[in-house]
Every structure is written in structure tokens, then in C-alpha cells.
Length: 509
Image (cartoon, rainbow, N blue to C red; front, side):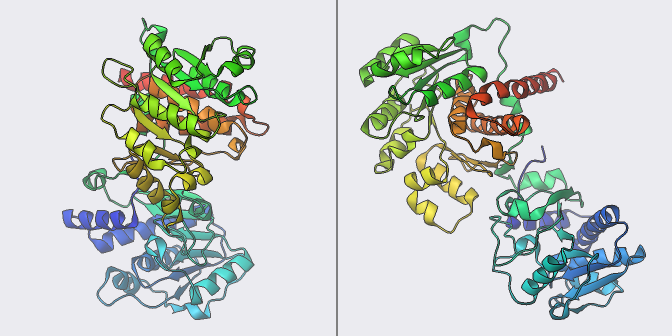
């Protein structure tokens, strides 16, 4: 699948396992890595007057010495600037000894306009803020606007979190090896990397599989095998029934956006559950989507008994308070099918905020043995309301989402330009196809409806959330400027059609 993401520690273990398995040794991996970077420099900057290679004292610097050697062998004018020297007997020391270019101290680094800079200082292993000579080198590169090719990760960017540690190079191109790291995908690291090139240096898929990775880039191969495809003889209720709770007469639009999105995503039936005073407003705008009064838990339970819906959305425009809490807990505790549970509840917006003072009430309901899957879709502010202590901790967005999912017993969709989807079992996916056009009121309501639509069709909760996030973002990207939330449900259609065709091709093989 090759969409696994490895932490810096996992990447180091992949190196170790590869060396142990043979025939590649450490210097062999280093030579392959340096050759991959050199090939990119030669291909992308054939007219470069000079290349400055900045080398650290570790393995990242060792890669840099290989790059410099190959570039000089290719008749490129190369200068090396070293921040310390490799440990005697190390692979990096051997790479340095093989390089005919003598290093100069990084403290004396100077460059000229028109040159290229290869950043091989620290890569993904950096754990403390970048300062001193390295920070000064960044200033020089920035002032001269030098194109930077980063080895593994721009120095100064955390491979674990994507955060900038003090200062960091802003690379034109980043060449990494075997698999991406979280810092390549999480912001602001993703922006600091520029174009990302993934190079094969001899670490096989079998080695990566031994690590049993739990983090993935959110792309269709992750969930396409679970993507719903209706049978030829499918009945509308066999395709799943989604219920969306509506707010009062002045706040009905958000629920309708969710309902329409659930229908577009393939749910066979969708019902808006509306308070009595909102029925007229909803009825004026609904056609294929059904409408039912739901002023009380008794009303909801009666509807559940009559129609046995598959998935619920609660929160968009619903209002904050006790009623939202009561309805959420009632849905999580309801036995809606013969197997004892619905497929899921998507809790968003007001639904999340309503549990600000009593999050454990929600988490305990979600952990009940017969409870349906709970999917929480907070943006940063809502995340902090439900998980204030986790939000305040100095953790990556990935680690925060994982910690929250484990505590809540729920799928957590931590929204943003680098949305992270995390499951209680430790799986997580980072989404990278987000579009700025999605930063518009109502966009999140559509996402909640798509997740519910996939849940209702039988997709497992983690895969349903991952698929919905990617499809929602892809639809927004394709639509582009001028997008408003009302456009999104219809914009989903071509993306859904292509995915259905891909799934059919995969199934037919």
C-alpha cells in the first residue's frame, strides 16, 4: 500500500532491520540515499553554478557527503560546510572519507545568488531548537533566496510533529526515504518541505510491515476496499437510513446540509428529525429527504422503533445544552437493531460543545458494550472544549488526536488543513488534500453527513471517517474558488463516481 507513515524512531528501526537482514549495510543505505538526492539536484538544477552542501555530524550529514562526492564527479562546483565532524568509525565518517571535497566550518558559511543549497544538517532526528551557526545559515539562504534541497526533512522541522524548532529551512524540494514521516504531512512542516520526493533506497515493504505501522497517509488505498457498493437488488433501507437532528426554526439549514450530504454519499434514506417549531421551515426546503417531529427522547425512541435507522448526526445548528446531551446519550444507548446497536453517531459542532462540562458522560456512553460507533468531528476550538488538558499539552496534532480517541472510545476527526483521523485502537491517518476553499460556513456540516452516510452503508467507523474526509476535501479542491457549503453535496458526485469505478476494478481483479 506504501501509505504507511513512520515516526523517526520507526524509521531508525527500519534501517536497523534492513542492515540486519543484509545484504545492504549502513554505508550502503547512506550511499543510496545520497545518490537519490544527488540525482534530484542534477535533474532539477542542471544549470546551477555552484552547490553548497551543509553537513551535520550524524547520518544526515553522511548523506550530504555522498551527495557532494557524486555532484563533484558530475563536474559540479561543490562546497561543503560542516557543523562538527562524524564520529570516528561511523558510516557518516566513512562517507566523509570517501568524499574528495574538504569541508569548511559552518560558522564561516557564505554563499552567492544563483547557487543551490543542499541541507544535510539534521533531518528528521532533530529534537531541540535550531540555533547558532545553523540558524545563521538559514538567514543567509533566506536573504539570497537560494533554492534548498533538504535531505530527509528540512533542518529545524520536527519529524515527529511538523513543528518548527527555533528556525528551519524552507525547502524547494525535500527528498525522503522509504516512507514519509509525520513531519512531512503535519503543518507547518508540510509547507516547509516544498515538493516531497520519496526515494527507494533498499528498505523493502517486508521490513516496513515488520514494524506494524499504525499511522497512514489518508489516501483511497487505505479504505477503498471498504467503500460501499450497492447490490443490484438493493432496497433503499438496505443502503442505510441516516437521521439528522435539526435545530429550531432559525437554525435548520445546517441539518439540511448534513442530510443532503448523507443522501449524496449513498444512504438509501435520510430523515431530518425536527422540533415541532422547525417543521415548517424544514418542510419548505426538503424534497427527497424525509421529515419527522422529534421534540423529546420519547419521540426519538418511537421513530427508532418504527424505522430502525442506521446512523445519526447530532450537532449542526442543534443548539448547546442539556437537550443535546440527553439526545446524544439516548442514541448511544438505544438498541436499534436486532444485533443491539446502530452503526454510528456523528457528533459535531453544538453536540460536542454541549459536553464541555461533562465529557465523561459522553465517553462512558460511548464505551457501553452495545453502543454504536461514536465519531467526533471537532475543529481546534471544539477539541479544546472536550479535551482541554490534551489540547494544552506539548504534543503533535497526531498525538493529541490519538490520546483523545483512546480516552473517548471514539473516532476523532481533528479537523484543519492537516486533519487527523484517530481510532481508539491506535490507528491514525493524516489527510493532506485539504483545500482553502473549504474554510466556509457549513462545510463541516456536509462532512458530518458524508461520514454518517458511509456508516449507514456499513463502512467501519475509522474507514468511513477517513473516506469522508478525503472525498470532502477532494470535492472542495476540484470546485475551487467561489465554493460555498451548498455547492459541496453536488460536488461530491464526480469524486464518488470515480471511486466507485476504482473499487469495481479492484474487485474484478
